[in-house]
Length: 168
Image 1 (cartoon, one colour):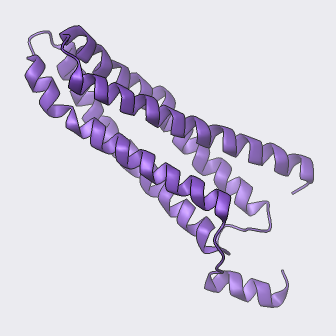
Image 2 (spheres, one colour; image 1 turned 180 degrees about the horizontal axis):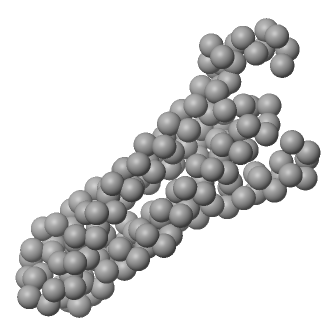
Image 3 (tube, helix red, strand yellow; image 1 turned 90 degrees about the vertical axis):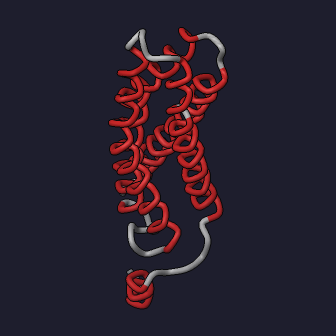
């Protein structure tokens, strides 16, 4: 990959990945608000906002991070399957994206309950632990991926070892 294209790919990947991380923090804040606010309208608004954030921010950024990460790895000497840290980041991204896509249904159900004015505040709060736990887990996963990207622990996969011996 030419240096200019490589830098563009890296910039795009870092931008969407940082955006994903920041969006998870916003989702986490809304989960805390949903659990702690005494105002029913605020709790309902938090859960309705979560639905918009998951579909219009989190899912697109997760997919963009996956795609740009694959492009970035294929266009550099790191490769997609040569180093354990790249493979581990790929697995983290795929698993996190899959969980996110599955979780959209739960957030949609929670938003539907929040839209119903007759749903008691205590019932909404009881369901509010799920977004808090999922957002916290997502934050940890994304921070681990960030640490891997910065520190790049040594270690070639079997595939990487073969390519290193060949000199390619």
